[in-house]
Length: 128
Image (cartoon, rainbow, N blue to C red; front, side):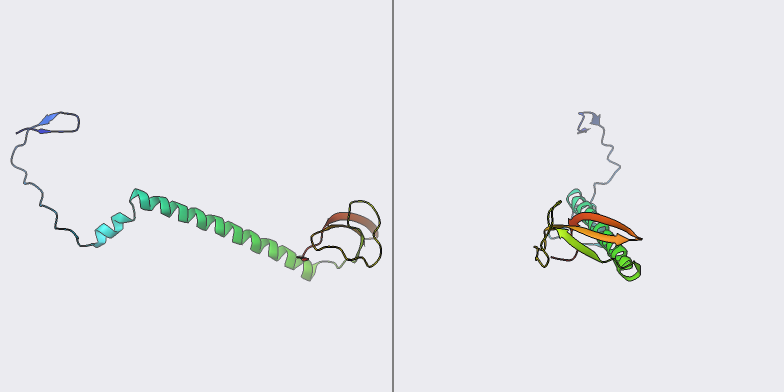
């Protein structure tokens, strides 16, 4: 009896090749080879890629936070101390002395550095 391929091409069976042995009954033994091949299956590869992507994102985030922390630490330990005065909690205007503002409110600051006066607007760090 001729064998056919998926392309309907007939093959002659010479009878010289022995048929492969039948697989053992279920459940089959999990050998080292089977365990290694299971990690390469399509469904498992997707999870490997997602895990690697999450590891890369978490590593980038951690490294960036450590870098920013080290910059702020260096500024605190080695930077020049500058005293500033809160002028207002809006971009323009005057604030009454002793007024307490919310932690997340932006403030206008005035400070002097190297004999020059600066005015900046922004949120105060470390207030939340």
